[in-house]
Image (cartoon, rainbow, N blue to C red; front, side, top):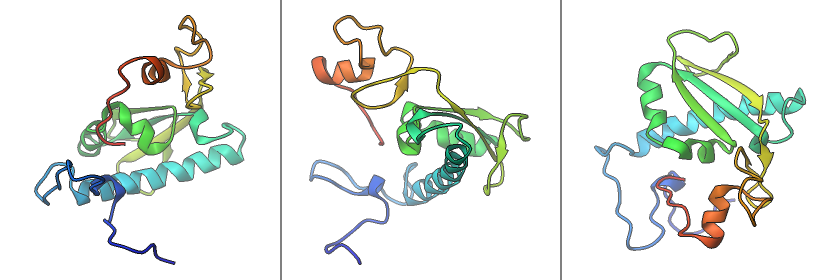
Length: 162
C-alpha cells in the first residue's frame, strides 16, 4: 500500500515547506550520501536487535554505539555530527577511524564498518527518553536532559539533518 501523492526517495532530502532548498546530485549530502547512511543504519539496527535479544539493552535509546569505520566512511558519518545518534535512534553515537576490526566491535555487512553496542550508564530523560549524562544535574529540571531544558525553557535546539 503506497501513500498517495508525490514522495521523495529519502525523507532527509524532501522539502517540507517552501523555504527549503533542494539538493542537486553534486551536493555533498545528496541522495547517494543518504542511501549510504541508510545502509549503515540498517547494519546498526541488526546489531541493536541482537543486543536486545541478548538483553544487553532494552531498547535502542538505551544504547551507545561506536562505529569504527575506514577513513572515507568515517568522514561521511562525521558530517552528521551529534545528529548521527538521532539517525541511528541511539542515545550516543561515536565514530572512530579504524582500518581493522577493534577487539570490542562486531563485523557488519558493510566493508570497513565495525560496530560496538553497549548499554548506556547514563540516566534516562523522562521527556525524550535518551540516556544522557546531564539528566538530574539541572536545578528545577531534575528529570530531563539539557537538550530538553533548552527546548522547554530556552531557545530550543538547532538541528540540521535529523
